[in-house]
Length: 374
Image 1: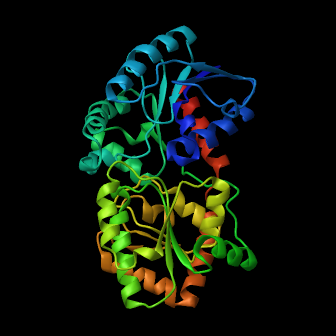
Image 2: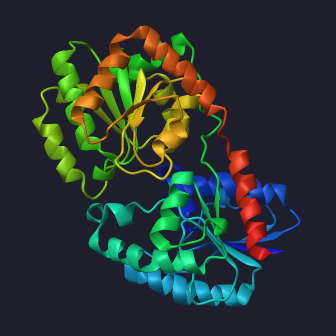
Image 3: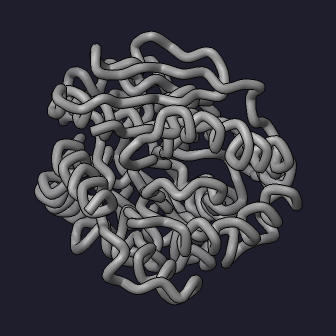
């Protein structure tokens, strides 16, 4: 069997959720199925460690697609031409971007439809492209895979797609995420926050992630609960970050906020594992991989009561209204002042984390691929 894969997301690596999904699933699928031939199609030079086996043929189809018009040309002309040459049994798009120009069976992995619900948080060109093409991608797809039952329901309702066409496979966390010893925690806190306890946020610095309200909640927490707590923010700034910078500049306790930028999985697993709690309260999320990373490291969680997050968290998180600064602040106070509660939540999170692993995700994606061919 010949399987073509849109491998562009691999170049983004683990700093991007789609890149992580692509890497973790296809690194396993390629090794589990040496009898099949895979074609990884990139739009620029690739890293050789992204060619997961001898049964993978990497193909670079340039130039790189960097903006909506280029996306259209790359998928509908360049990619379409390449697929006609390969004649694969199926084409898989881990980022959801299909080619409407070919009759090949296609699998779209659609992670979420945030651009439909909060279009103002996307750049104009990206928003228009997504809103025009994703309904068509969903209709064109032989099968759709998504990462939560919430997203499945959203795709069905937004695009009038039959639920029988959509499969669900949860995301997971790198096996490097594991509990730390107290000595490790103490050493890491010395390096990261001068020995102080801290909350951690992991994700892009973007309004959709609700970073502004988290910062305001932390400021109120520090006003009302004198402590040496810090707030470690892990992630790269997005295009709307200036609005968040304004909120940061207005904080009373800005000196207690540390922007760490992007961290490798090795460093991230340690930073999460040494935290007092994860604070991850986006206003919209298709899954929320940082929740599972915290679960795997035995760290309690504060997260949103909306979209997919209650589904992923189960009973293993303190849920808050992401639009309420007071609720977020109160949750921080509870985690910081109630030792027994924090320990109980950490234990619940660790047990919940056992439900998520990339082997299962890869197996479910493979099943979806087989259904698409059939």
